[in-house]
Amino acid sequence: MNNILISNDDGVFAPGLAALANALSEVASIQVVAPDRNRSGASNALTLDRPVDAHRHDNGFVSLSGTPTDCVHMGVSGLFGAVPDIVVSGINAGANLGDDVIYSGTVAAAMEGRSLGLPPIAVSLAGHYPKHYETAAAIAKTIVENVSSLGLPARSVLNVNVPDLPLSDIQGIHITRLGHRAAAGKPESSKDPRGKVRYWVAGAGDALDNAPGTDFYAVEHGFVSITPLHIDMTFYPGMERLGDWLEGLL
Image (cartoon, rainbow, N blue to C red; front, side, top):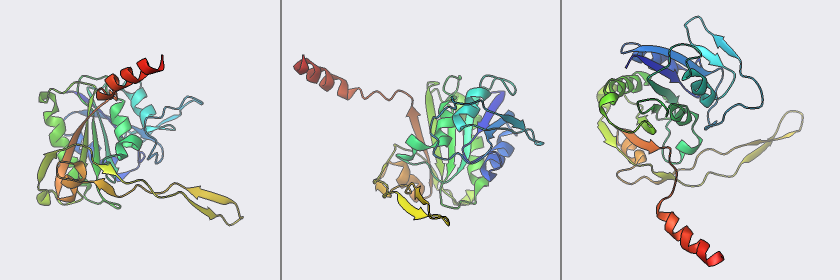
């Protein structure tokens, strides 16, 4: 592996991005293309209604006025440097567990690297105000150094969640499935100083399925969680039932 494209959804000035770039620069040539501001929850959105502006910073990082997916979509083309061998996204400030992967800009940025020869990697650090970015960076570096021997199809994605602990306190690594969250709370309304009603999307629901074997369980017990994801969202067991149902409609 010669070239790594790094992105995130927390923005170009996020501490997790800097920690990841520092760690991965020790094992390959890196280029960083990230949003110019926090774009958490952007999922796989592409900016199609306006042009996207780019700015190269003094440290060599490139920021775009678009989404995490925009950043990787343009970065993998070689627009800002060499065409990468792999995409690594993160380090996200907060976990991306269970249903979070549907909304996560961190996971979406990794997914946009699916056309490359190696499975892209999304890295998140659990906790509301995480601080042990060096732990997640060390884990990410180890995974990247060894991912070429994994043999997963290129359209697979590794979703990595790291407990917010010193590296010495990490209990190990578990291969996990996605758990599930309970439904989020209702959106909240409030009035601004001029009396206009504004609305806030509620936070994520609590873990509903956090049984052993899930990503929730692993992180809660001090283990790094690695969940292999796949872009093919077809529900194959449902195809036969849909076929039988369709026959009854005709």
